[in-house]
Length: 240
Ligand code: ADE
Picture 1: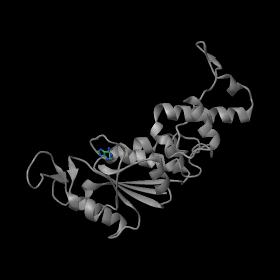
Picture 2: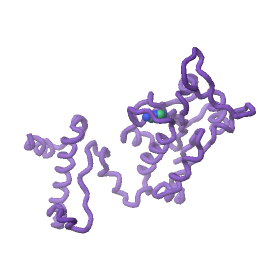
Picture 3: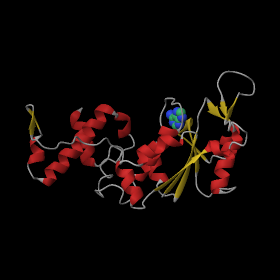
Picture 4: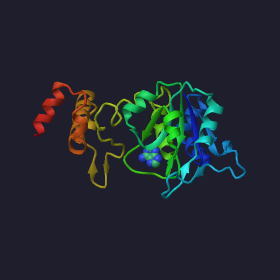
């Protein structure tokens, strides 16, 4: 899968993309990331990419021409891939959205900066707008990395363990069960006995119940749309 990133801060991407899982995924040819500096498509002498807002008011607005020129010169006049604008006004990024995007052969990610982007970028260039949550960052670079990370780890082969993504919090609609590793006792705190038992059926049942309990305690809203068996419902009812 290919990610084409359009940004005014190209230098922030390599440190993350060159580390850990994503580095391995790139080396194995599972993902490719191309980083394009929008400033290179600004035609004036000072490579200006922002301007004051029509109508007045504070802040600067990202100019449309360098962004259109960058995307169109890389992907052509009508790109065949989704062109995603990262903005706090977009639809909220969730695990479901990551699962939807992973089916695309490539994604273009436009990182907004300054106080906003010229509306014509939204209307006539972007085909999708995504927010990573209800808070405002200084730009779309961290959101772009968050999307690249969440989508990449769904690509078969990117995670070392192929079952790795299945039990993740949110993948099943529930939060994940608690994890423990050695030592079995740390500062007097014991690993739950059942995990040391070797009884795989009991362990699976304990994990499922812990996932249900944790979701009920922390994110009861998720239970509305989770895929629950009768045994799950009986367990939840027994807690009430
Ligand atoms: N740009 C600034 N804040 C953002 C957010 N929460 N999501 C996506 N892009 C953004």
